[in-house]
Image 1: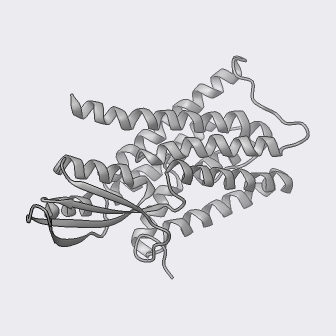
Image 2: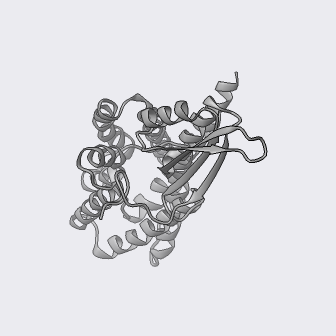
Image 3: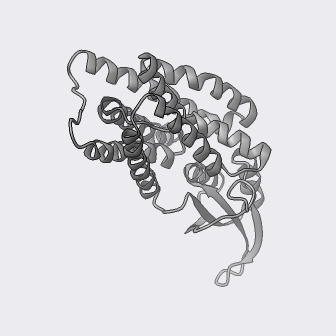
Amino acid sequence: MSKIIEQSRIVFPILIGTAIYAFGLHYFVIPNQLMEGGATGIAVLLNYAAGWPLSITTLLLNVPLFLIGWKALGRGQMMYTLLGIVSLSAFLALMERLIETGLLVPFRSTQDYMLAALYAGVSLGTGLGIVFRFGGTTGGVDIVARIVARSRGISMGQIILTLDAVIIGASLFYIPMSKVLYTLVTVFIASKLIDFIQDGAYAAKAFSIITDHGEEISKQITIDLERGVTLIPARGVYSGQQKEVVYCVVQRQEIRRLKTIVRSIDPRAFIIINEVHDVLGEGFKEE
């Protein structure tokens, strides 16, 4: 029963996050011909170019990427991604139905698109921030970035930024330059909100875990998250008992999963989470 409750605390926020994200796309982005990055951005572009529905296109684009990611990254890293992909497509379809029946009237700006760009950024950033905070993703370029980063040693941030730039640049064939510039405002606001919701300006957090089960926790982190771990021997001054400190740096979407790993092995572990202002090395930035 406790396991079901714990899972529901992760699943429901991811569902809420994808619902907010889908709302932002259909209420602010599409009606005002703005853009978005990633696989969703490709779906938006195809909607502008050929009128394809966002819900179906997003799902079709993510299915092959998910299958590749499942094979390359393993089940542990892809379960909440599957939830994010399916729920996003479902909520996009719901929004489309609400708009068709007139129950939802999208916001269309006739003069000043800045208001649409700002609110699009707020809604998209809030939705994605909630999804990322609880260990999920909406698929797309996140999967590609993980695979390439793992095989080529290039940081995920650089890969995602490059792919987003290509997708948004391609939209110049279908929307005016002014709309692309407004899109950059949306992307900026969304990125800041994602960081804010994740409770930190940078995407990484450093964990110091004081425990009696250091070897077991370290092994599980290595298997599930594929992150490097440093195990440091320690001694409690008051108790005189020997302890171990597990030190690990993870990205924002992995924070919840790391906490779950630690609590499942040692509920009494003492966890310290520190802000990380910059990270250089494998899996993060490379100079």
